[in-house]
Amino acid sequence: MLVSVLAMLSILIPPLSVFSSALVALVTLRQGPVAGLSTGLLAGLACSVLALVVTGGVVPVLGFLLLLWFPVWLLALLLRMSRSLALTLQGALLLGVLFVGLQLLSSQDPVAQWRGVLEPFVESLVQSQLIEAGQRDELIGVMARWMPGVVSAGFLLQMMVALFVARWWQAMLYNPGGFRSEFHQLRMPRYLAIVTLGVLALQAMGTTQSLLPDYLAVLLMAVWFIQGLALAHGAFGLLGSGSGWLVGIYALLLLAMPHAVSALAAAGFADAWFDFRARLRGRNGTGEAG
Image: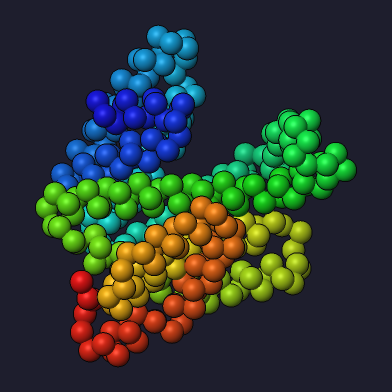
């Protein structure tokens, strides 16, 4: 019931979709893939009946629900089997790459398609005098160029946030403090940092007409951003720092999002090479404080 209600309400209040997906993931983590899939199917049936009554159609709703629940169910299954947040995040990255590929396959020119979507929005900004009319075409061009990658990165982040919420709920119920320990130790393998360097090199050289390197770079930035957050949480835990530092980081994410995200992504990328938390543990000679 909660999965269905939250999914339908998320059409009006998008953040609720995270909790709907998290409930499917929680059932999967605790009771297994069959129970998680059954929960999603029953909730999908309930939502489809409601959509049929209200709108007379179910296809758009089913597509929305499939995109909302199925990837998170897959990631929850991977986490249940591997017990590794790092491996699960790599799985989310693969799903993000697949999402980029679906966008490229569904349209011969996704940039042009996004231009058509963004033009009314930017025009409203011009009419509201939030931007100058002379900047209209340039802004649309820049936004349309990056939107396939940005949407895919948003898809990845939403999946992982839902999974983190589910894992946190599971830990609160059955293993208090377990998620905290797992998240503090989250660290991506060094090979992914090498792949990132290769993608950035292709992007800088511009030897291909494809925008795929740009989209992959945005996806990888989302992954390193998550590792940067884990690094911040883990480092402050090892240093025994108060929660005020973390509050400050999240405040910066709200007030200066592009710069704060870039800084955390850079820190996460550097951590793949230098493993700052291992150095802190070596210096302290103990595990996490507090």
